[in-house]
Image (cartoon, rainbow, N blue to C red):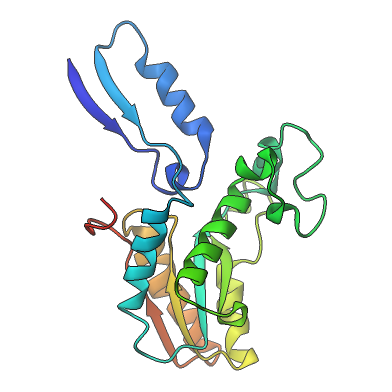
Length: 212
């Protein structure tokens, strides 16, 4: 027998996307395979995960910053609506993700907003010191993606006097092209060209012991 850990694509597993893991379960239960497996359940609000994020951030908070940006992988709005089995909750109002209900627990947007909020609270940050954005949209798939967009936010912040920012991508378990290229290179360039002064990207948790 082969022992194997199934990891649902980082942000998929952390933030509660179940379809991906569910598809894997069906596949590996094929009688032609002989596998022992364990699926890691969503842990976006787990105290140890929030602790790991906050401790990582503390290492980069010695410099003054105007805004902390939590940037998560975006999704088309239609995918969010698909997780709402009631068909009535998601996007029904501007605070739908704040409501404690089954629909919110199954909602990716609600999950990431909660992860950001819990981390900010752990760090004693006031609401005006942090925000959540969404990156990596592919408009040829669908024109309507979760907002606010990370790249557009980088353009706007300097015009609002937020010229020193701290950025973290909690939905990515490890650094990859979407953090190192899209955020650290392209995102930083957008921010500086818009008049920003300091752009600091906090590395993903990677192999940090608190994360493992």
